[in-house]
Image 1 (cartoon, rainbow, N blue to C red):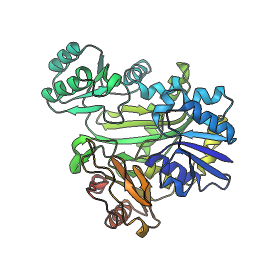
Image 2: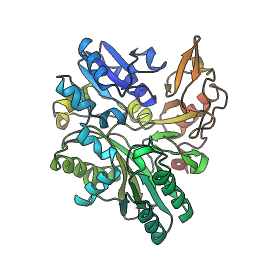
Image 3: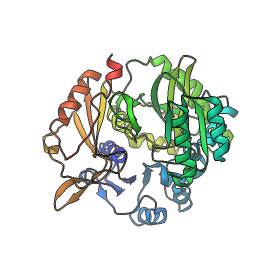
Length: 420
């Protein structure tokens, strides 16, 4: 088979890496890809937002299956367009991807179908949002309704912080139209976790749970990023809790989407808080998480292509998805200044010293004059696999000591919560 993966970050590198292990695939293309992906696939310089050009390429090269990594093309209807062109693609339509594209839509869906989540209110009027925050008090969570590359959420510890967040989103339009509407939520306390699932309408096949670390500094300090590291599975979360989440949250969500005429096919990401009252949804995404994918896929035993094919034919129900009895840890190395304005163009050294069970997933790299250089905020994801979480963690941090680029920053506490 010929397969096309759309995207060019660490998540797509992990997807390509996993697909490259399938004996059924002859050739993988990735648009636009990155230097790490280029070692496993043929990179094609087409932007993720150029849906028509991607479809033309898929036709010309007789691509038999396309898979999309990032949210942006999904929300712009890449699945709808490919299907109209008679092309095979596994992922949610524009209508189904709205579960990520609008936080207000997701909240309304949860309220209608009684899926547990935080209490909330949504606003398009700045003054009304301000009045609500002042009445409710802090801590409180402010979210831009639309896509903001994982940065449109502020957990405000004080009313002043909440007011500043509203001003940034609604008055200063820091996230463009994404912040024209905001969702204000009650602050939930507990253990955070992500549960990804393969979905083909009503059938849900959960993956191993993972935990992301969003704030840029140790101890969950500093501004939120796209994710500074993850680990999977979670030794502190009982398997019966995962079963409960699937039963009470993920399956009802899939069924609700079918009821709404927005049947979801693809990867459903559920971000959760395990509160004293039970698990509650923080957010949904309509695709693989980044960097969760970098720890989840290395633990997958089943051929990923087989799962995609089963999903396309509504055959997930009869599919057994197997997982390795191991742990994985991913530590993100970022550029100095990230998530604000960051450095670019620093030479990356030491990757030649890394070997399995450590995998280096490229997130923001490029080649210049034959040298690998930093190009994004998040540059590399260093993933290690071990028999235990401690072993995986030791391997990942051991590998990081061999890798260097000017201004490299990483958290030193990824996964440490689970080891306390």
